[in-house]
Length: 389
Ligand code: BEZ
Image (cartoon, rainbow, N blue to C red; front, side, top):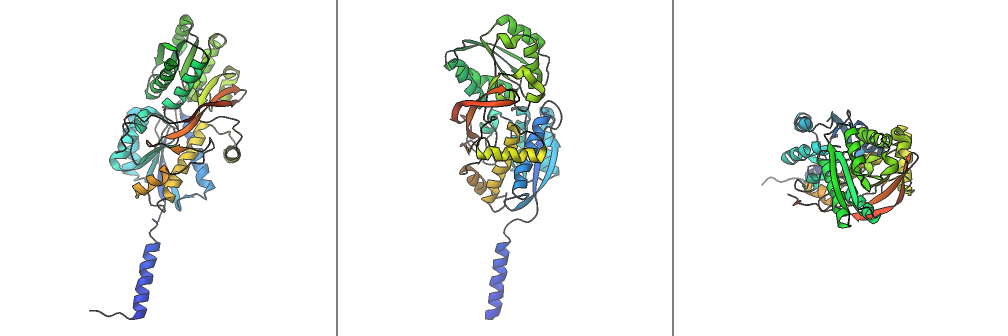
């Protein structure tokens, strides 16, 4: 047997220790941002990216010790292009993690591709039930909400106000359908009745015929899900049609978030429910708002918060694996036990990886969605059909 001198043995063990010390993966972590940068939801995509980059820059540009490299794809909120777009990031660019997207019809294809390829996915908006329901998985996380959450909270609010007959109006796609479904579930449990569901194809914004129908039905109230450019136009058209004075309009908070500059007085007084609000006045939110305004010369909205928290989730997971995103089980375990210190208020992820969070009741006052209370405390998405495979 080959004998080694004590000096050689010391050198060998030092070399071994050194090789263990470099266990942290070298090189930049490739982050694929798949977001809308054009179309109805363009402003939402920009706010999400801003929020994500803000948190990363607060950490010195690194998460879990890894520098980040961003690769961007504009998904145009177009479900027909979703599979091709996500495969650009997975197959062409070989990204380590995907952050996206906004539109519920696009995110379903992303979840499928992420699962098939084993790529980590963090969803910073799209509330599609399928992502944290039947398609949930150990490598899929959401920093935002499920479409059911703010809608269910608003259904309870409308029922408590004593409304009996409500008309709903939304874009005809997963987000609209699920939002109306959540509202209806709580509202009808509380003794009300949805008498008519109105809708139009995404991203159509020709509301006139539907507004005429609402006027002829004369419901006690209207519940709506619209966001981005469509929300701006709907609120203005509802007011111009003379309906605002006659029939209370309620919405999932996307109706008035990031839109108030453009909606002006037509939004004044509207009541909405969402997991973020203006005037929370907590040290955490105040610091976030100050930093966001300083960085972008813009007020943050719910989308900016969701982007910021997507970066926090990635940071927590990477801290649990010393920067190694291939250690999927350890990454998921670290995220599952974490409390995310969000500007909205701290939250945890439920068993289906969707935030368990307070849903605020807000009222538009001038350019703000003022908090007027918590409509639903620590609301968890039911995660129907999630088996975490
Ligand atoms: C969605 O498609 O899931 C969605 C889009 C905009 C705002 C909220 C939800």
